[in-house]
Length: 175
Ligand code: URA
Image (cartoon, rainbow, N blue to C red):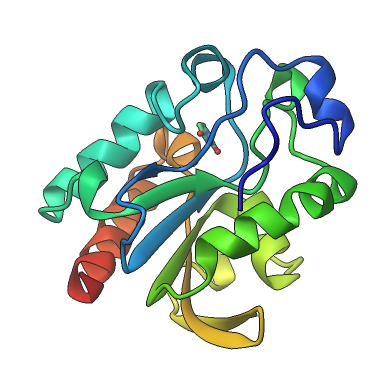
């Protein structure tokens, strides 16, 4: 299930250049969920192609994974202005698209606090749950869930960066 090309389900349509649809293997066992497209993603219409994308790809490469082994998506498909966190209303509007992307996967990885909150309702500190396997229920189906750090949080934080690499190693075991 995909948004219409002229989707206007929430206010993010006002500022977007492109709707950013999932990238990678549509049949992948693992799906990686970020929070929302940034400036580069909005321009190119592809998730994780900027600085965060390079960090994510490096973490995947260290675990022997490439973009084409997984599906990469975001909780919202249009760029929040100024890269702010998507609101609960914006995430709710995009939810049916996200759920259809998660359904049938073996593992969902949530990158960062905002995506983890959207996927689980968890409001606490990410550091308390990062890299601890859990499950989420999507369309009545239980799926393994791994919360971890957003690549942007890894820029000046070495321990977050190694946690992200470890999360990708866990992902590799599901492929
Ligand atoms: N950050 C995200 O959460 N998603 C992207 O696609 C790019 C940066």
